Image 1 (cartoon, helix red, strand yellow):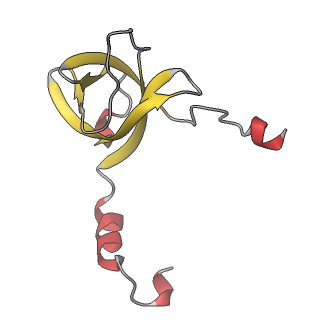
Image 2: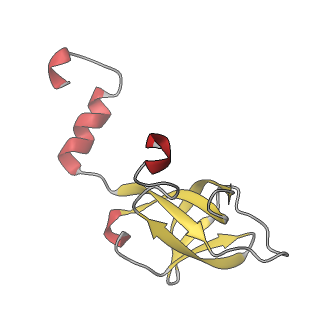
Length: 112
């Protein structure tokens, strides 16, 4: 609440509200792994075409969906792209960006 006076991070938030957000945290799933493929752990390059546009912040195998999951910040101007690649230990792996929760996005299990 801007009317509550000074608070930690107020200046950064004010600057962001003037200029807008330039990156967004995104959820990615990677193609199901082969037996010899290693899982992402975070810090992997997020690639579009020939350009590295970001790095994963957190990643691991998602047991409930049966695929590796990765989170990373990417520039907002690329959000509509679909040709995502995440490089895991030097191996480029096709990735899908998701806009909703991966498991039970409507909360049906919680309400059962």
